[in-house]
Length: 88
Image (cartoon, rainbow, N blue to C red; front, top):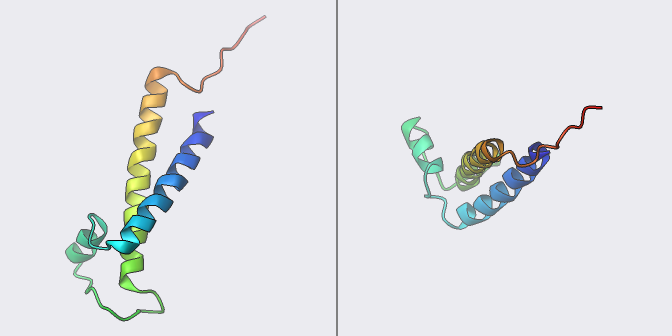
């Protein structure tokens, strides 16, 4: 059961971080990943996509995955979401 809730948690965190990162695209790790890969941060759109939008999407995916992973580990460790099976 915690799989579907995990998906909702990922989407909520992704959208929240995407919104914050659109205002502050220099937040790690999005900008750092592009910097390590030597991709120049330009002010004009490349293939119609501005660089700050790519930074924001990368941030949303990374932070969404981290929060989803933490939730999944905690839910599995505490046994939340598991149904008790009755064997007759």
